[in-house]
Structures are given as C-alpha cells and as structure tokens.
Amino acid sequence: MAKMPAFQFYPGDWLKDPAVRSVSLAARGLWIDMLCLMHESPRRGYLQHASGKPVTAEQLARMTGCSTDEVSRLLQELDDAGVFSCTEHGVIYSRRMVHDEQIRQVRREAGRLGAESRLLKQNSSKTSANTQAKRKQTGGSSSSTSISITDPNPPIYNPPFPSSKTEATSPNGDSSPDGDAARTDPDRIAFDEWWSFYPRKVGKQAAFRAYVNARKRICKERACTPAEARQLLSDACVAFAGSRKAKSEFCPHPATWLNQGRYEDDPSEWDRAESVGREPSLDEVLEQALRGTS
Image 1 (cartoon, rainbow, N blue to C red):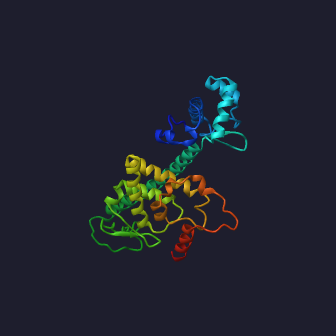
Image 2: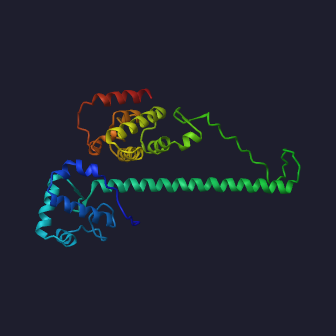
Image 3: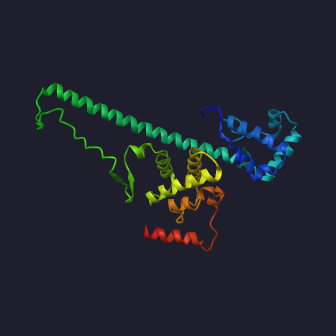
C-alpha cells in the first residue's frame, strides 16, 4: 500500500461524536495515538502488524509510552463507549478510516479507468490525423472526395460535435447539458461522479437539481465550503452504494435520497437486517410504488 503523509481529520466530527466525547481525556489521547498508528499500518485503518496479527495491549503500551494496566483500562473505556470496532480475529479498527480508505480506492480505480479512456481517445485522434496527413501527401492537390476501391487510406468520417445548446439524452430518457459550461461547472462535475456511484439510475435531471440544493443546504447548515459539501455527499453516496439498503427493492430514487437528507443517516442503519413479517414504512411503500411506475 502506498505511503500517505496525512489522513483527513474533521474537528467538527471529533467534537460532536457522542462516543468520543463520553470517554475521559486520557482515553481520547490514546485514541488519537491509535489513529496515527492505524494510518501507518500496512492495512490502513487497522491496528495490526504486517503479519496480520493484532497489536496487543502490552505492545500498544510500549508504542504509546504508557503502562500496560493503564492502556488496558483505557482500551476497555473506549470499547465500552463504542469508539472502535474489532474484527473476528480481535484486530481493532477505525470505522471512519476504513471507510475513507475504501472511498480512496474506488476513486483511484475510477481515475485509472478515466486516464486509460483519455489515452485511447488521444491515440485514436493521433492515428486519424496521421492517416489524413498521409492521404494528402499521396493524393496530391486533388479535391475529389470519391473513394476508390484500391485507396489504402479512405477519408474518415468525423461527425460534428454537438453545439453547446444541444442536449444529450441518456439511456433512461433523461437529458443533460452537453457543452463547455456543463463540463466546467464544479457542481456538474461532482454530480456526475456522485451519479456514477449511486445504485439507482433514474430521474437524473431531478437528481441534479436535488444535488445542487443539498450542496447549498449543507454549506449553510455546516458553514463549510462548496468543495467540502460535495465531498460529504460523495462519501455518503459511496457508503450507501455498498449497503444492503441500496441493493434492496426499497432503494430510494436519487432525488428522494438527496431531498430527504439521507446523506446524514447513520450508515449502520442502511445495513440493518429486515425483520421477518415487518410492515414496510410509508417511505418504502411510496418507493415501491414509484419503482412500479418508473
């Protein structure tokens, strides 16, 4: 795993997290040290050795300069408050750091695929330009557009690019602006990434409007920058896309998810098992009805 010099830290989340605020100052100090150790771990977000074995209380005491008894007591305090989670093998991990690492991996893969796509387009453009240049050199000054059967370099048809006023229609019938303004609009760029992650592809234009409204609402309520608001929406979308709720028949429409502020839900609620014989909620009934008409 590539070495990263820093990890994201949100002071607001640290100060508002009820689990973290419920433990003692000493326990919070130990937790900060543990976060730094988990960031440096070969498996980012997990307190383990390169061999995969968990870091013991005795080893953690030596790493942090505390006694084993004190570390054991503080670990128990953190565990009782639900600050960290443990794997089935007893490895302590940070839910937030593991989640952030998963998002980073998804974005890195998406960036790699995007770079490969751009490279293919560039190579295709260069091949087309070279072919046309060669044809001009061998064809002299003739302006004839007829193509002979023996012509080794027939002219290539390049359809004109749509004007900035035209609209491209997506497979589900939604339209989206296709022009310089759309390609450079930060909200549009961020929304296209958000849309690629969201599991249900319906109502794209309504979803874009809801996305912009949600971004503005987050900026106002949290007094944050537009870029930070877009980051929050993207992180929440990636987390939701991997949940049980997203894969169920009650997955909300994108616009509904945004308008209802579902990005502020507790992610653990999205993975709760459905109770046998449970009556569906009103929202779920409406979503099921909408699915039947979409």
